[in-house]
Length: 559
Ligand code: CAO
Image 1: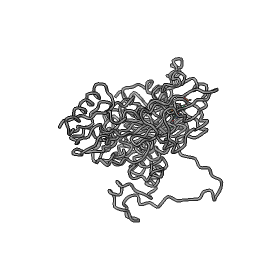
Image 2: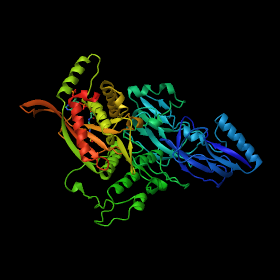
Image 3: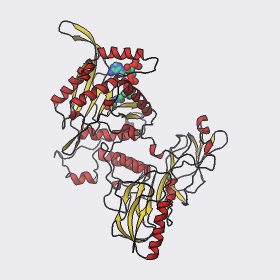
Image 4: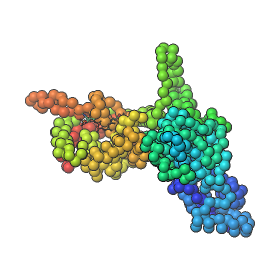
């Protein structure tokens, strides 16, 4: 008998992967090659098998843990001396040279999706995209085709998903271009070097792959920074609760579908797959979400928590089914897919609207002097190319109000209020693909110039679809400004788990009575939405009034 630590083998260029499923438990007798756990990145998921037979003594990781090469995942009691010796050697090898277990090629598939496939410039602007080095894996099956001829492909965009019995991975394109020819279809079996697609590159994209040359796998795809243009916040998006006990049956879905389901909080195990061999597709996840949202279906968790509602019982949402209308009967229609951002933000907004008892306060702030000051500052700093925005002042003023009214800088966690001692303020940004909410971190420690600059950078990143999850996390309070567009007041939806959001519309000159005469003053309409579970009406009115006082005279911030 000998104890052997089983470590994560060489997982290629991946820094860290997440444990998403435990397939064994202490006391289990396992065979060599038996899968122990499943790990996942955003581009690949794979099972890590045991290199030896034995009895699981203890498991060193839990669901959600991040692991990397060399991390010990479990301890195995190896039965015979010979096995122990081999196992010990294997462990030593894994820890010193980071080699993969000898028995199964777990190290191989993981690295495959990291490197975008080699792109070979062919005749005049045509770029051939081939299956990259997928190590010892042979004959992997194309289970998902993610693009179609005519699509404009971005560099790093996934083209197809391939699958073996131990891993599924997305194969990204290393070049941008227009897809001219797709050489594979669903069910095709491919191997390294097989031609996947032909792109017609733009001038810029045709140059890009040159250094990679035909044989080499191009620079690592930025798997971890794949476009993430919605706000994904662990607390604000209901995390998909991973299975707590080993089930040994991970829902059959590609990594991107699993990631999409996690972002929406969809329990994948409850989704019925309509793809080949019951594979769950993006459409299945969307249909499931729609059914839950329109009340025609419930998740198991919902069903377990709430008794089945009967009409008028006041339990659950108790809604009528969504009306089904044949619109084409009344005139011409066109169907358009909702953008990915809209789908995800829509689900979050719907939850927030339904679950938070919103109340709205409207007020006006006199920003005459502040606007004069802003215009003056911008004139003085014109040469330096610095533009101070009204929104930057609003962020700064909000920080002062959050400090004075700490329950606005809080989140609900069960019966407790979590009061935050930091001041991260998010702002809603309109992009061609939908609404995103980047965050100015530590706004209390920054001046309006720095905030204006950061806002400009984040707004540009948002429009270019380049915001990463970190850019959109950690907010305490959000401001949604329609000031550049127009309108008087509106009722923004609170961005859970925050408890309030400030809406701002277009300022305009108004006659304001000063006790003796009407004076022309620049008035800014403020709309505050707040969670009545946490905040009272009186506090909300005070918050708005204080905000108005600061905007009218910023010297109050110093008091
Ligand atoms: N009143 C009058 N004018 C205003 C104003 C206000 N409250 N706020 C901004 N403006 C002016 C600006 O001064 C600017 O004018 P100039 O070009 O002459 O200087 C112009 O309007 C355009 O401003 P902007 O909107 O581009 O810039 P911003 O800093 O105010 O906002 C951003 C940046 C990213 C917040 C904005 O572009 C945006 O996306 N807004 C939409 C947010 C949204 O969709 N919210 C709804 C969400 S639903 O909850």
